[in-house]
Length: 143
Image (spheres, rainbow, N blue to C red):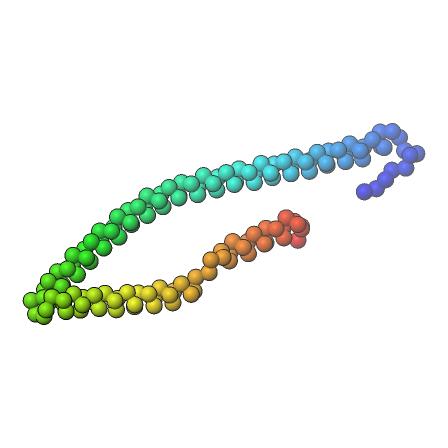
């Protein structure tokens, strides 16, 4: 910023101070607007998350009901299998065969789930990267 010599008129000496005030007022207004915008965006995000969480909760309840119904179907199918096998072999052995089949199913599902879980990352990588980029931009907005 250039300084004016005191030899110039009073009006010329006042102009930079008024410009400084208007620039600082402008920067203050921009900062306030950005803060307001940020707060509004956060509130919008909260509202969207609440709405989506409500819908997800209802869907999860329906999945829970479907899971229980599926469990009941498998229980009665297993019972039917035991009773059907009991016509061919002793009832105790029939129950043991059905239980062994379910044991194999459980082992296979466990192994597949364990394999898939090893590929899951709990950290949201893309979000972390964009937050770093946003922080860098906030520090140096002209780059």
